[in-house]
Length: 298
Image (tube, rainbow, N blue to C red; front, side, top):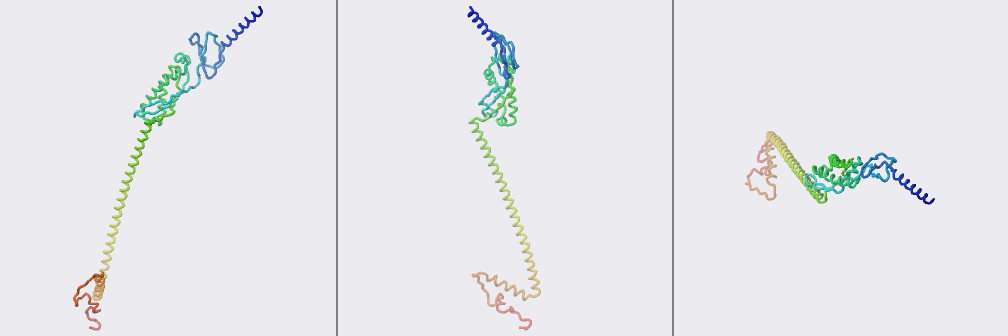
């Protein structure tokens, strides 16, 4: 009898402990709790602490209350000029409506990820498809990420989730496009180099032509000046000869004859055919040139 009473008391105690344990739950600062009764959400617990629920009848569903990150890797995106490149994106989100999150996605982050992945892919194609590859690497990149976030946010809010931010981690040209781009850039550099060489060659020819023109002008000017100086010298010499002739015509005639000898006999093959009474060598035959001495009269 006593053993039966003890057994009953132990059963009652065990049931009481189970009921007490099942009616208590704890919510920490990184999560929210949904209290569900017969499939219906009764309340949402958002503050951390110790709470009670009806045992057996009510169940709990915990959802994250912190910033979550989803990665979307190797998205093949085509830009406006037809080239394709790979994009890695990351979505930062937070569950803001736990009840809607439970009702629309069955409180499954995997379902949320799948639906946002599809919407993100569409947003990437729409946003990048309106721009060039260079825009994705420029200051327009921030504007593009904002556009993508706003396009994905509508889908996220319908799931009880808010998109905090969307970041583009990588934007790389695909291998075949990268080779084509390299070849195009290489050809452009060669064209620029050829243009620079052509400009340099034109400048070289122009500088050389100017230098040759200046050289010709300088030589011409020097020749002109030398001719002027020579003419002035000739005039001065002729003037001297004229003065000498006026002062002493006989000496002037002698001087001119002496100058004529070396000019006429210049060279080894020079031959002069003269008559014996030629006046050319008269000063060699007679120092007075055939004239009488004024002093002696002979």
